[in-house]
Length: 193
Image (cartoon, rainbow, N blue to C red):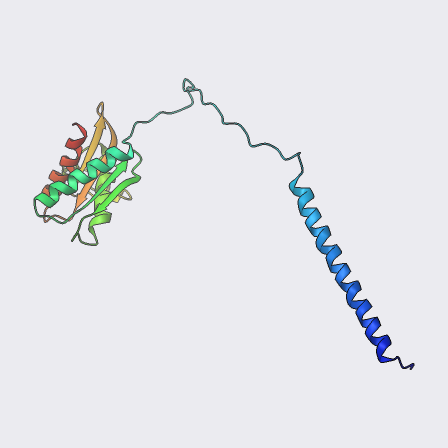
């Protein structure tokens, strides 16, 4: 094997490092160029324009419901009525489809009160009747209690527009369902003002 001088080895090593650095720089430049080229393409499709809806189309359904402001006012009125009576309750307001729009857990309300309030509100809007009335119907139709998400205890009241249900208010946590329903009715009454 041929011996190389220290000077030759240093020069060879320096040339190799320079060649490696040049290769890395070339790769980096190629990568940046590729990103820039793909970012500058002009054949990217534009986002579709908003579709206009024909409100006269017989295939569309239109529904009425409480806006969030009205639902919040109703829930707060029910909670205020309970607080005034010294009761610790939770209040739920659901839309026509039974989806919770507002849920207020009052100070001191028990852990079961939130779910019970939601289920009472769901039951009231589903059958368009106060839950105290619906609880009485169980004697004639005991299978009603098997419908998922329902709770046939007093404390739920429907909110109606032209006789049709648009929302439900449920209250739970007072010592009696009659009190719960009285507070739910206070929430309904505030919407008429």
